[in-house]
Image 1: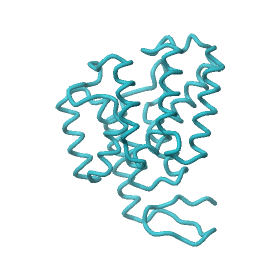
Image 2: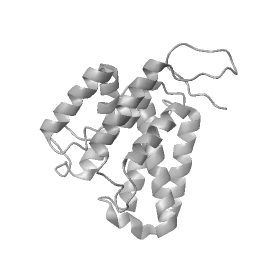
Image 3: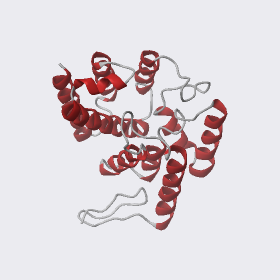
Image 4: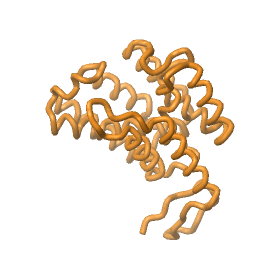
Length: 216
C-alpha cells in the first residue's frame, strides 16, 4: 500500500503516511469547487468531463511529493482562466484566497495564462498568452512550478494518446498547430529545467519527444 504524503510533519522511512482530517476537508472542499466551476465543461473535441484533467493533475502533484496546498492548486489551476467574465474571475479569486489562503491563490495565478480583464471566450491570442506564460514561469516560485509541470505532464499524456489514436488531424480542433504546440511545450520544459523533480522533468521530456515524433 502506498501512502499519500501530507504537508504536516514527516515519518520514518517506510512508514505509511495518510491525510489527516483537516487535509481531507480542504481537499474535499477544493474538489467541490472544481466540480462547481468546471462540471459543464468537457475536453476539447470529446465527451470526457474536463474535471478528469483537474483530478489527475492533483494526483500527479501528490505523486511527485507535493503537499496538500499544491494538490488544491492542481484542482483549481484552471479556475481563473476558465471564468466566463472578469467579474466571475474576481469572485473565484476571492473565494480561493478566503478558503485556502494567499499561497494557494498565488500558485493558481502562476498557472494561469490570462490576465484579469480576460475571460473564457474572450482571451488574448494564443501565441501571446503562451509567450507570456513561459516568461512568467521563469520568475515563479518552485511550489507553483510543480503544479504547472504536472498540468503540462497530463496535457502531453492526453495529446500523445489522442494523436496516436486519431492521427495528426486531431490537432485541427486546437487554436495552435503541431509546430506551435511543440514550441510551447519545449519552452515550458526549458523554463522548468533544474527547478522541478528530476523524474517529472524526464517524464515531460519523454512525452514531448513522443509528441514531436508523432506529428513529424
